[in-house]
Length: 338
Image 1 (tube, helix red, strand yellow):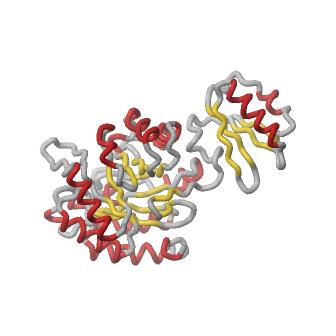
Image 2: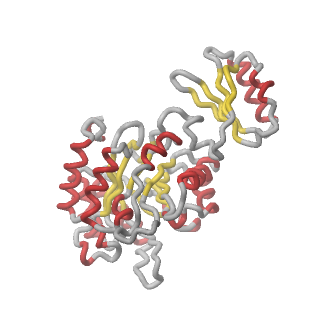
Image 3: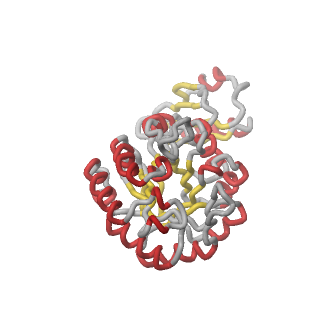
């Protein structure tokens, strides 16, 4: 339920309303916009007397909402959220690119790629230290050593680090990580989502599950936010359909749909969505033109010999060419011109 307050509402009366809601086990979330001040009510409001609330002199109107997510809902938070990722601010009309290899393989590999993607215009560096793989025989990542290598790359370039968290017990190792990625396979690992929400305020890049609806994605974001961490970004990485020509089916309609439903930034991953390097550039351009807040693209210095997902990785030269094209699409949104 949303309570819209009148302009110039008496502060003491508003505080009284907030206390009244809390006494009824309703958690009020106040959002002050340029035109209106809203109170989002989280809890069991089914038995609340809307007429009683509507009659208060400070209340303009009361609206019930149908969506089960509250913290992620644009109705509660009309303005776009801007997530500060160690200086790279994602959301609110700007545009950023996260780039790097699927897996961290060595110091030389990671620093070399980090320098090349930064020179091409990327503002955040991705790289997997812990890797969820379909086969138990595939490369599983370097683990703690991989995180240490990522820190070396960060020192060499200054780029904030984005890397995937797979289990609650790994969380203490992520103290120096700038953005925690929750992968598609863990999108509905609710214990992990609650722990990340409760134990850290670091930005979280939440990837859509391969068969998840947008409401399920938003409800997963809600788990993190309801536990105390509001810094969530939603990532489209392709969904599983009957089509076999691509690794997954990229759903670019999520960009306008999510922006209508939620205030959270929307990130698109054309690498995992297509699974094939030649398709990454056109899909990246499509996502850029449709208003994505950021892209996350896999780049490897030697894709044929990559330990993970080489077939979908761009070379540094391919990435540079792609960056020139996507930057031309939205020159006024580009981060360097903010």
